[in-house]
Length: 300
Ligand code: CP
Ligand code: NVA
Image (cartoon, rainbow, N blue to C red):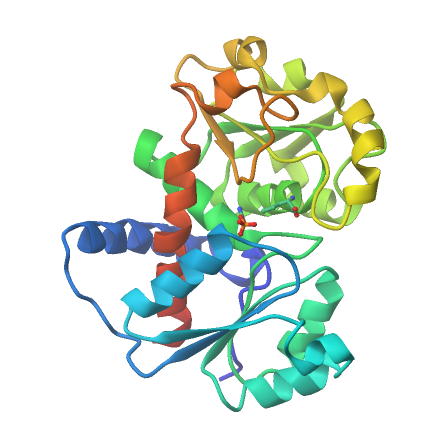
């Protein structure tokens, strides 16, 4: 059987994704009850981080340990990757030593080349193109607070970035409607939008996207690697802050999500991020439970 990777949400079927969300909720319950569950004893996860991380690193490392396995943190600074060893060779070598590998990097195509040369499953822990692990946690969080996300309306306000791209994949796979509001010049990639088909609508008006939405989501205006564009982006995104006025246009029981880290006063007001509709801390916690379900699925 070919090795299964998790590079985008499209690598799993809608049924498998629904199963993962259910399993994440079960594993969370087990964990909260203090039940020891260690199906991954003896298994090793290698974690390659070419970009910074708090949530992804800790959730994968803690999750692997809770499941009975071990995790190795690998930074390019102290591996040969940082000195130019080809990604293909790194994949060949690492995958002879460990059972599963997760990577956070810049170019999506680099992750694809890594996966092509790996004998073990590879997980996308964020590239410039997408962040599928975050969407498992986001959908889990929605389901826990409001039930099935199928048929609901989600508003994406801001940059057409990696998170936005994964929201498009999620709209298709979990069958919800996604209304994107992005400034001109910052829309999501056309091929990804096309893949979302009738699940996706794009405008340049936050109010149009937010009106009646069941969930409002945003993300930073400048992603990792775009630090030099910060000033230009603050200007371009000025009218795209998720604030109380925008939240009022959404459904009465609408939730607010943000993958974090957040910048209060830029893409979201402090009032919304720290307010009653915000579920960002549950969302962050669910990275742990959702990725445990993913690791279990790929390894057992
Ligand atoms: N949301 C997220 O991926 O956070 P980190 O960058 O801290 O991993
Ligand atoms: N879009 C952000 C997400 C961080 C988790 C970035 O890529 O920096």
